[in-house]
Length: 301
Image (tube, rainbow, N blue to C red; front, side, top):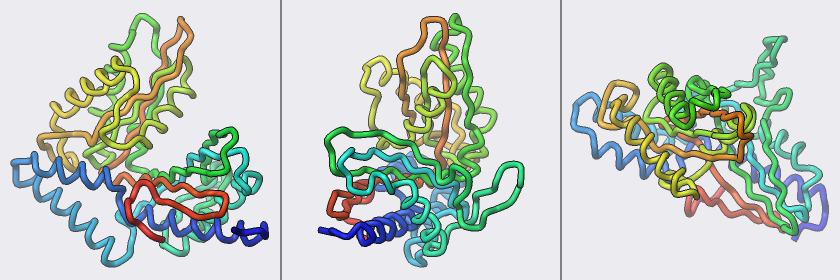
């Protein structure tokens, strides 16, 4: 157990730097398994070639210890932190330092450009970046952190809108299909589609990004929500965007919906997408600053 606060900080920063770098180079278990499943469904030469290129890329990233995609994104952390975790007061500063360290360690492409100044910071840290979303867990001394490397292409279809109430959930579906048909090809399919449904635009948008953190194959806790996920997934696959947008039997890795209770007069929808190289990783760190990687079974930093 670490009794010295400085020693705790240094150990935590080192773990998160190495974990963030690791996330850029290794797809999570569920994404890798889903890509293998989708490859088996393809029956055209071009679709098979694209999937072969993807798996060749994954293999080379592992062998060469390089990022799976050169665009390592703007780094986002979704933090579920216990009120008794020893570094709760230091968390934001530690994560910023971890990003700087990971940028050199991986290395990660420099993607943090300051708005208005139009200047790349050169270390992936900038104003409010890395972006950190917080969830406080009472009486816990652990922290669970989701790392998401949101590349530019996978963010292009992202949008959110408040619908007229009479548009109903059909309006939600229409919004999603319009966006994916118009911009999905730019996000390196097959896509993971995150949908947020709420009463205001900012809540819907945040929930759509949170939906991308769920394991592929998981379902909305409400049976009607799970049914809507399945229907939208079937409909998007029927479009046959295919790997890389070159047509094929499927379009998506999955469809995840997260919702919040809404005002009776408003219905908002948000959309976020993840590319085929969906670099999302989850780690749990206890009060002794020992870690467990959840998203990549057996992984050691």
